[in-house]
Image 1: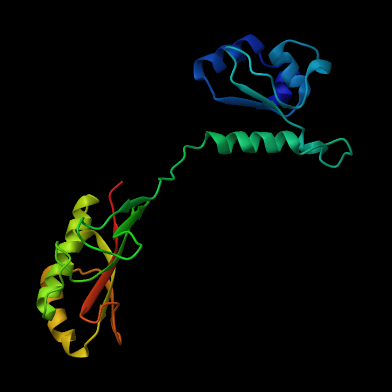
Image 2: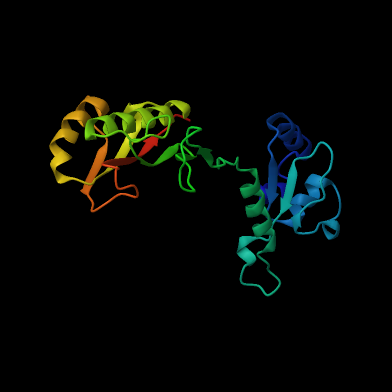
Length: 221
C-alpha cells in the first residue's frame, strides 16, 4: 500500500475516508513519501518515527524501509517506537496479589493463611487449630479442624474443595496414614481427587500438632 500511495495509485481522500470509517488505532508507513501524501505536505517535512498527534488522526508512525537496512543512514529506532506502542496498548492482565489473613483470635507466625495471584490460590500449611486457637487432642479432631479452616479460606476466595489442584500433607505419626486416607477420601472427594503428596515428618512447629495441610486451588476469573 505504501508503494501505491507513493505512486498516487490510491485515491488518498478515499483512503482517509476508509481510515475514518475503520478508525484504526495506528497507521504505519514504511516510506516518507507515502506519509507525505497522507499528510499532504512535502517529504522534507516528514520525520521518521512517531508523528506529532493531531486531532482526528490515529497514531501515525513513519518507519525506515526494511529494504534500506543495509544502508548507513538506516535506523531501527522508529521500529522500536512502534513496538513500544504495541506493548503499551496491550491490556494489563496482572492482578495485585491478594492476601487472606488468619481468623481473629488465632496467633500465627508472620504469614498469610493464603495468597492469591492471578487465578491461583496458595494456601499455607494449615494445622488443626479451632476458631479459638485451641489445638484439640486426637488426630481425627485435628484433621476435622484443618478441613474446616481450608474450606473457610476457599469460601472467602470464592472457591470450593473441588477447585483444589494440589495438596501437601504433613503427618508426625506414620500410624495415622491409614486413618488419614479414610478421612481424606470423605473430605476431599469424591474422585477425581487433587494431586497429593503425603510426608511423615519428625515434628511440626508445635509438638502437639499431628497434621498440617497446604494446597493450591484454581479460582474462577
